[in-house]
Image (cartoon, rainbow, N blue to C red; front, side, top):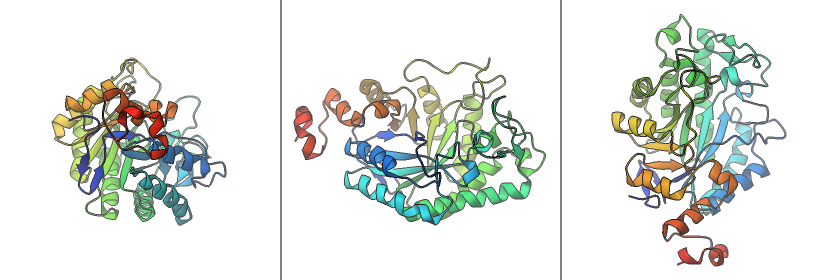
Length: 344
């Protein structure tokens, strides 16, 4: 296998294994959660650039669930047409499109009073969140459900639930941030499982469901890969078909370990989840080198490779990777003169 082999999971068929991961743009200038021309150009240019799967940035289930007021949201049907416009344009260039549905929880910086499993602030610069009541947690599950319903209506090809980077679902399944005494504290994965089950009930039967997780925490007393395997098994049972394996985001880095500074530092965790659960995974984290990205697929460490910063620098990263790896792929006829070695 290589980076330019097709990939299929249920009804999702990708022309290659290159993923543009969710990366917040903080560019909703009207603060209404609705994507605008910036988002259109940002995502469609990566479709023209050859990415197999493009995943929209974290899109929130309620206004106060945004990291900032400049983030995307799907709490209203009014946003659906703007998402549809971008999805249809990306499809014109052969890319499939996903969306990451989430809630920032205690990391909602612009919320008057953020909410969380427990009243523990992210750090001294963040507000102390209000603990959600048990009924409010159940209502939050329904907010995720409705956002997924709108995403399906908009025409997304796949849904990703955000359970990573210290946001709300991560806050619930982490022993560091969930100190509750109700049913959602006695069973740390209960909230995440209910969100997955709600999402599963809204997506078509042939649409896979992705979950992004942090497979290791970098704070004092934070969990590692073995704990991530255990909670991932619970989410898999609830309906997750593929894991997008990242790390960190739960707090200021402490003695629990340092995030890697070398290329591919998170790949061993992706491989651990893949092998333990026998489930497809997306690897991410400093994988901008096409040779490295290709080797991850060839060595079966992961099934898909997400290239984030590399695509921020170069929307045509995928085309450049094909040149370097000597793979022939379809490119827009307008750009053939720029890529003579891979032109047909």
